[in-house]
Length: 210
Image 1: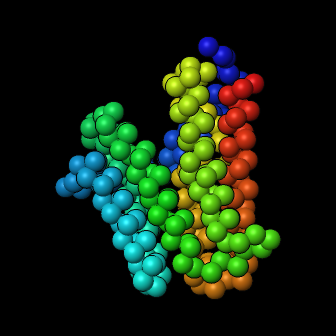
Image 2: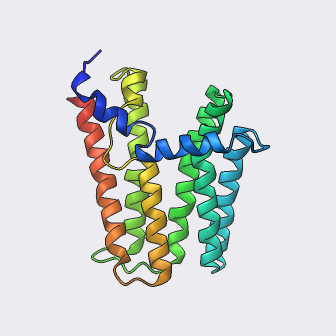
């Protein structure tokens, strides 16, 4: 097993979504009274994302944006509520990880209905880039490195990333708001998200193989 003690402090800050992990934990403590199980909150977050996608498809962008905000909030607190109640489980963790990707997938898919005005390449290419490198490959590298035995579960759980899923989701929501508001340079933020998603993918590959 490889040693990376010199990185422990930085890795700890990045673990569980970095800063967003601390926010979700705080929310979990305050929302422990909610009369829903953590798994029900997880399913509800995906349903909100599906509703958001449908609203974008119908041209109701702002209502769709609100649905995605609710989806991300629910997606951020389900695990925290489970920990606050002492109801964590392997199935719950599995469902939470799947819902993370589904919520982000439906958000990115919804952007196909909004003219983004991205430079150099069609909007669809930029969207697919974030979907592939951000939503899919950053998580895949971590899971596959553990599956192949290259990293232990603890090392895989602590693998660093420049742009973690929580921060990526928050930046995507800011971008959607700016794009819907008509801000002319919103595309710059999306380009940054795409670039950092690619950088995180490369960073994790380097971390695994070195």
